[in-house]
Image (cartoon, rainbow over all chains, first blue to last red; front, top):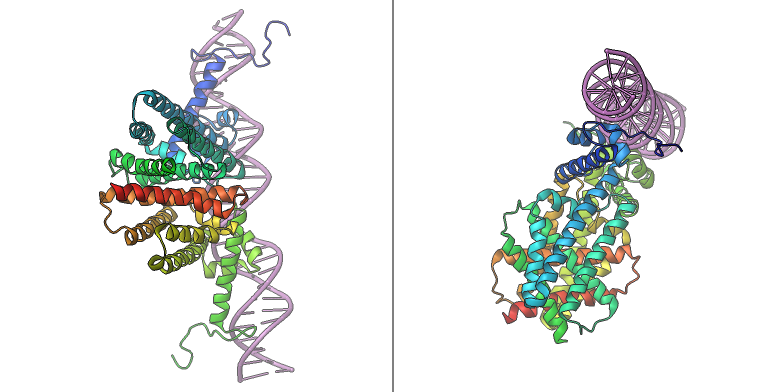
Length: 216
Length: 216
DNA sequence: TACTTCTGAAGACAGGTGTTGTCAAATACC
DNA sequence: GGTATTTGACAACACCTGTCTTCAGAAGTA
């Protein structure tokens, strides 16, 4: 109540304040999580192995995240917000000037570009499936959000699409699934396919769908 | 070497021969596996819980399958061969007489019909992802096979599609991904969406793609 | 009925993991 | 320099799971 309002003194150490050390450690765990979950996979991950990777002690892991599941979610959300933001950037820049096909190509190229890091691809495309009910909820929430993002972009291009709402939702989800599966395929094949090819193939799904829907 | 060639005598018990009892037990585990993996999920499954569900002892589990992973694969392959066979049936019957759209609708309706059992949907759509490298290999082999099946059907309808091979492969995989994701969405929503709606929405992906590819 | 085989329940054992506690060394403040 | 705090390594503990063994009783066979 007097001078120090914080219960924990929080003095500086190693040239960093308490707060700085905490965020640094969180970042270390985030990096280690991407490495471990993105290579060995979540299922075989252990707290000890993760701390070894992060070069930190178990205690800090429990202080920072508390469970492997929470760290997994943190890593996922970190990369997904990044991925999403980049796509939104690219597309909103392309929207006013470019043709429909060019916008689609730009968005997909951005998508596959971000997933060219196999660890990111693994964490964002496959590792979250079936971990726990909570994670499932969050994961499919993101997928739905991604679908809505795609639908929003589509409406920018074709404001007069006339389809039942539930069908539109399913179509959006399907497209996300298509992107997910093709990205997984790309990853599993060791990125042997050219990114250009991935973009053009998936773009055909978009374009085909749109020409169909608009001409309806 | 004399009369009994089998090392294990294999006499009858409970009115069944040794062989009969073995296949019966394998089936019991298969059923229990579908139930456990399809509801609680593979990750939280244990040998003990599975045996309780199957009403059999641990020993028979190790005799019949040996590991949860092998049982999971067995359950998966069992349902997938069934699913595949039904779709092939429906489509090959529809192919000569019906229009393209009708064939696509018939195939998709069959697909979603089979997945209306939530346990089957869960096992076939989500549970195999990221279990182990071996299972991954097998799983994505099936996905690839499914993609090739779809491509084969497409060629029956449009023999003169002219696209690079690698693009065609990615497109096939994408379509499987679309079906997978929409089915997962359907499952997660407790089948609130009409099957009809699922079929029509995903059919638009097919039809759109084909009109685009053919008109190229 | 006597004997062999099969079954089911339970327990024993080892290995791995999450989690907490201990303690010496490093670092900062006075 | 002396003292308090922070850190890192490691051991300890409890728990769960896979796996194998034991053993009494059921079911068939002679």
